[in-house]
Structure formats: C-alpha cells, structure tokens
Image (cartoon, rainbow, N blue to C red):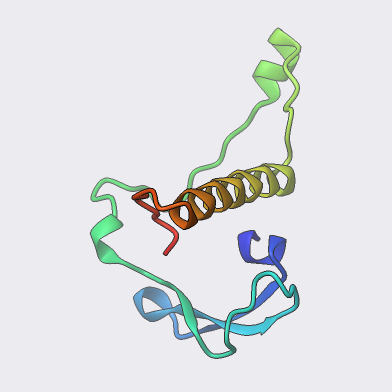
Length: 107
C-alpha cells in the first residue's frame, strides 16, 4: 500500500521467509525506481518470539458503549504515514543541501 502511494508497482517472488518484493514499474516521475530492484525482504531479526499467528480486533464494544468511531480507515492511515515520511525526507534533503549533517534513514 505504501509503494502504491508513490506510484510504484511491486511484484512478489518466493514464499515464506524467502519472499521478496521487487519493483515492477514506477509511474510517478518523482519516485523512479529501476524495475527489478529488490525493495522488500523479510528480516528474521524482527521476528517476535511470542507472536501469535492470527490477531482479530473487534471494535464493536467501543462503538456501542463509548460511541467511538474510527477517524481513519487503513488506506487513509497509510496515506498519512507516507506523506509524513515524504515531508521528513524533503526537510532532510533541504538541510543536507544547505550543508547540515543530517541522519537520514531513507537513504
């Protein structure tokens, strides 16, 4: 979903721990990634030892008893998160171009 926000189409290859995501196409001139580039891979260092296989949330009680309604759906949440990351990237690029030392996790 995040790559779709910047116009990058992915193709997935492999299965399980060996699954990777590679760039199939880049459709936004601001975010050109070369086709065939691996951009997603599974890193076992981030596995959680006590993780359960399936988690299902049910907000019906909060909706019913508290009148709670979500502010975002999943697509809106991903869009906002990508926009925030892009804003940070742009700010860091401006600072870097101005000669400031910037720690940039995106490069």
